[in-house]
Amino acid sequence: MSARHGKIRTSALLGLAIATCLASAANATIIYTGPTTYVINTTVTDNIIVNNSAAVLNVQSGGVVQGVNDPTLLGAVRTQAGTLNVSGNGRIEAGVGQEVAISMRGQPATVRLSDQATVNGNVVMDYTVGTHLIVQNQATINGNVRYAGYIDLHDQGRINGNIVNAENGSIRLNMTGGEVAGAVSFGGLNDYAFNMSGGAILGGFRGAAGLVDLSMTGGYIANGFRTGDDVDGTISGGKIDGGMEFYGNTSSGSSLDVTGGRFDTVAGDYLFSMSNSLSWSSSAASLDIFGGQWGYNEAGLGFFFDDLSNFSVTGWDLTFVNGLLSGYLLDGNWFSNRFTFGTDWTGTFTINNVPHNVPEPGTLGLLLASAAGMMFARRRREAATS
Figure 1: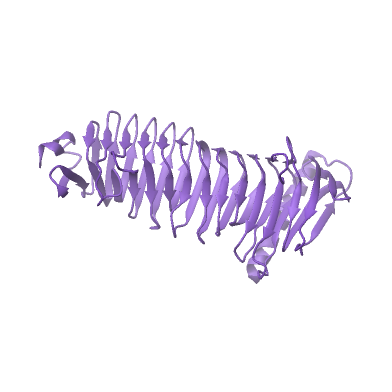
Figure 2 (figure 1 turned 60 degrees about the vertical axis):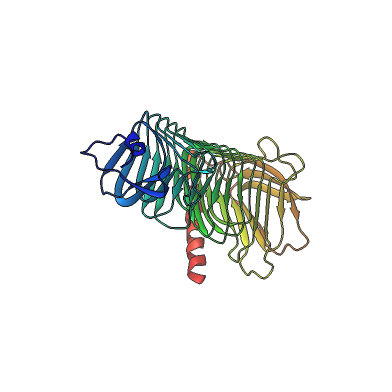
């Protein structure tokens, strides 16, 4: 083992780092292949590979991995298999000429960033399944995340870049907190899941062709939710600014149920628009509104529907006169927005009025539960006939 590799201080009880030269003695790579735990708490200027499903590499306070440019490698740290934990003030840094700080190329592979850990450079993952990225506490990624697998963003964890799904790879993003400074983009004819109960996405939600299973109960999305993915799910809380646009271009059609939340747009743009750009599709896109604050700050041009897209609203004192739909939604929020229909619109427009008296809190809960049951039953029927 060269003196260069001696920069890593690992206890004999914790395992042995096996150093293998892939390019030259001046540009070596450290490979961890043992089913044990390794610790880095000093500065290492080298590339590292974790290559055992039972291996755990802990980069702790005082530990820094600074990659070196090597065209045969895809990052300063590459998890072929195993677990990488960066905690305390530990850091992973892409070297000069490297864009990637962490590359997750194998399975199972887990990367957990916690405390005040920092990653300077991109985090990438190919379409291999069985990978998991966790960003929690006050950990920060200064770069983009191109990913396929599971991402959990919690607490005050921050990604100072975009989250984009890797080519030919599905992704599941769970946000209970944290912040994404850029956009979240799903697309590539894959299956995606997006669960948001907290945190913020400042660059908006975007997408191309794909299928997104959505559950939003809290959190904040700025710069709009605009996607060509077909979105199937519910929104019961949280806030979306900048408008919502669903122009799904797969054959299934979007299906969105809204029982709560706050929504606005920018002047001169639609608050919500829905279409199904595949004219040959037999599946209608649908929006069902039971609650929420629509246009709480700026309603813009209101709602727009085109192609095979259906709309329904449930509440009381709902009227539709000269393109303006007004009344109370099922959760008691006042709704007053304009509706426009495209020249190719062939969908349905349904107003469900309940008794005009304002329900007591217990009655309102029963109505919302009944609405949820209706949505579930409808999806069961759709699944049975698909």
